[in-house]
Each structure stands twice: as C-alpha cells, then as structure tokens.
Length: 163
Ligand code: SME
Image (cartoon, rainbow, N blue to C red):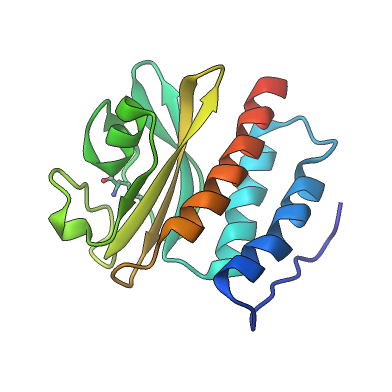
C-alpha cells in the first residue's frame, strides 16, 4: 500500500480522478476490513478534491447511519426516501444536485453546503450504503464526477462483498 497520496493538483477534473483511481485500488487491495477501507476512501477523496464533506451512510435496520467521513460533524441517521441520501437509496440511482436549496426535502447538515452528489453503493442490486459528497460551491458536480464516482462506488461495493 502506498503511504502517500499523489494528487494531480494542476490537472483537469478527469485527470485528477484518473490519478486517484489506481491509488484507490492499491489502498483497498489486501485489506478486508470494511471500516478501514471506507475511512481511507473518504480521506483520499477529500485530499484529492478538497470538497466540504465526503462520507458514507450505511443501511442499518431500515435507516441510513453515518459511517466514516471527512469534514464537519453531520446528522447521524436518515430515513428511507428522505433528503438527497434517502432518495439515492430509494431510487438506487445517483442524485446530482447543483443547488441544494432547490432539492425538495434536502437535509442541511451544514449550512455551508451548496451542491451535492450522492452515489448508491450496490451489492447484488441492493443498496447497502451511499457515498455522499457536499461542496460549498454551487454546481460543483457534473456528469464527469458522476461517471468516475460510480466507478469508485463499484470498488466500494466489492469491499462490502468481501467484508
Ligand atoms: N444533505 C444530505 C444529508 C447528509 S449531509 O449532507 C452530510 C441529504 O439531504 O440527504
């Protein structure tokens, strides 16, 4: 496992993800512990992009419960279908939210959040968790983020399978 993360700070968004992906695979390789892997994933994403908040909510007993994250403290439980995270869970589809104020039922864990993307983590077609990312900038996330983050979500799904 690499001890230091290389961030392609001068590169385009796509170039940053391309630099990050093989390093994420290296981080996860050979480590079976789910919490250790989710924790390092959030750190690597935060270090690469400096978003406001990056974290996981895990499906537990019919709720989403806060898991490993990087950023300010956050709400600990989210109901099915509620907020951006609960909607991603219910629809089993990525939610790309350019302006959180325009999303009906958005849950404001931090008043600094302006835009958000939530990607479901699927195992055998069931949502087991969501990856939630918040930005202090409006319209931070686009379909490039969606494509790469869904690729990362597939890696995360494998962590759940082997945990
Ligand atoms: N905004 C999310 C809640 C989680 S925080 O952003 C960390 C939502 O509406 O589901």
